[in-house]
Length: 42
Image 1 (cartoon, one colour):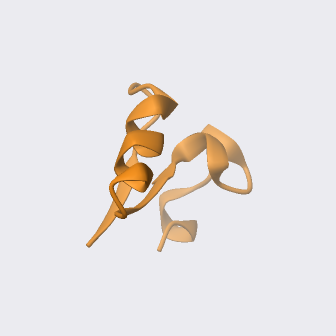
Image 2: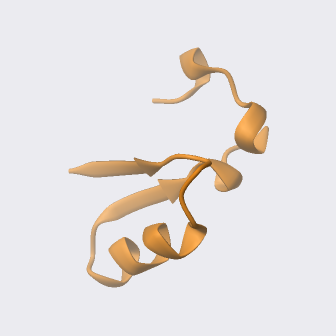
Image 3: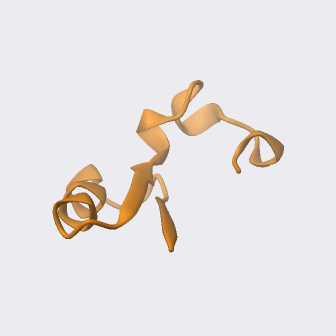
């Protein structure tokens, strides 16, 4: 299962999920950060 942690949530949530071996990324880690268009997110 993959998780995308959205901009209104702290990045620490994504880091916590990663520490529990979940595939997680925060929107700040995307190429255009929080400005990445939805169609670019897969």
